[in-house]
Length: 123
Image (tube, rainbow, N blue to C red; front, top):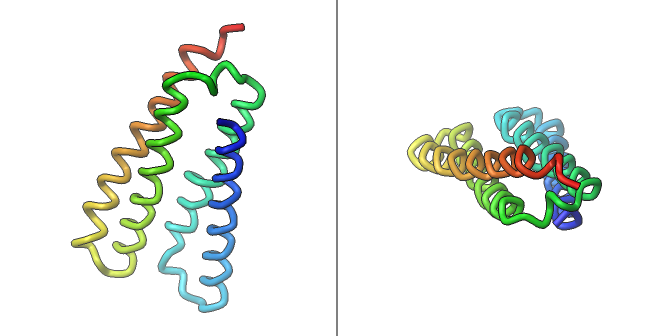
């Protein structure tokens, strides 16, 4: 689980850096919030969680970890697509996607938090 999270985090990091470079080259920063979310929801959050799972493997082997993994990695791209569409002027399509992606991602993060609270203190 830890290795998968770290690999996915690296992919988000690469995507975020490429988007940042594209925005800089074109001097069009309409997708700055997508860039920020790629970095925070993708790169930073998943890298920290992956490192935590390396340090505390008992957290990675739970059902909550698996549910978090899938919800986070399904919800975040939907959320990011919705936010991008909103900033590109397509609120009709972007709004519902952002809403659905947010609910799925938040549910996944809640699973991660519950997993931590339940299992972090165990040997």
